[in-house]
Structures are given as structure tokens and as C-alpha cells.
Image 1 (cartoon, one colour):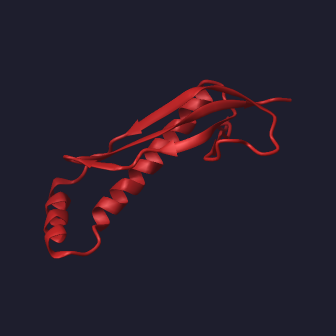
Image 2 (cartoon, one colour):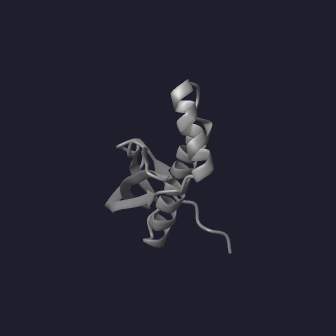
Length: 109
């Protein structure tokens, strides 16, 4: 059996949709950084340039959080999440923290 698709909508209002709004749904992701790559990124921070390891880490954190948000909405019986927001990714000691949240909704009809 395939999983039911849950819509993640960043708009605060769903245009042309008759929906009922539910409770807030949240997801937190904190993927760990690789210590060796962390040291390399700190050296790169001294010399300048893009920090590719941290960029990938932030992208992974966003993907994890959105996937978890979708899973939690599906488990609660929602058709989607509206008003999806992502917290500003924060590089913490040894990882990246991101929070995804929005209101679950059901389609009427």
C-alpha cells in the first residue's frame, strides 16, 4: 500500500480551496556534523569561501524536517499542512537545527 500524499503549502491561505484548519504540526531536525569536516569548515571560515559541508547539512536538515512534518500530518489524518514555515537554520555545536511548522488542514468535500 502506498502512502497517501500530504500537501505542504507555504501560503497562509489556500486559494480556491474549501478547507478546515486543524492544529499546529511541528517537526524538528538536528542532523549531526562530521567532526573532521567541521574542522575543515572552520579552517575555510578563516580563509574565506563557500562552506559546502554546512550547506549540505542545512539542506539535509530542511529535507528531514519537511519529511517529518508530512509524516506527522498524515498520521494525524490531515490532507496537508498550510502556512508552512521553516525556522532560520542554526548551526549548533556538532550539527544544524531547523524547525518546520504549520497548521494541518482537511479538504472539505
